[in-house]
Image (cartoon, rainbow, N blue to C red; front, side, top):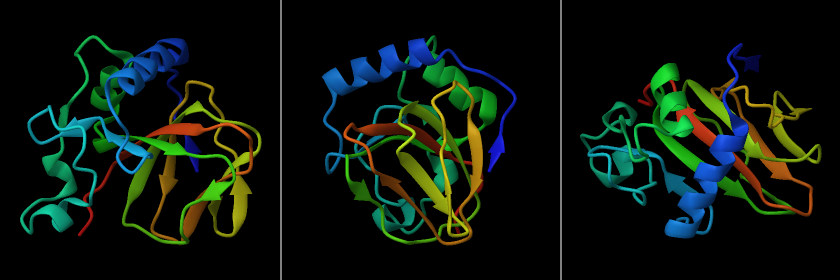
Length: 161
């Protein structure tokens, strides 16, 4: 995991996420698209190739968020695509899986009891305004051992094949 040496205004991002949560339902109570093909689809969270054979991660480039938002600045500065707001409920974890390439994680709300597990090692991604690059080629998962919801903004750096 690599910490990016740029800090975003986490207070502003939290305010923006609260606006999104008031306006939109999370798909399966856990995800919301922050980028899409046309810049207005919040809900097509499936892997692109599961939606249409010709779609790829890089087709999801247009931010759904307003241009003056800190979330939009993060997306544009880092060049990520198919960015999502992801919620992990208390006492839950994702399946043990692998993806292709690198992901950018920016913790919005988290706890010292929330972990990303890579190479069978527990890592805490702090909500410090810094994005972190995580290689997801290896098997990994995330778990929330706290009593509160964990929210991360997650974007893709490299196309999944």
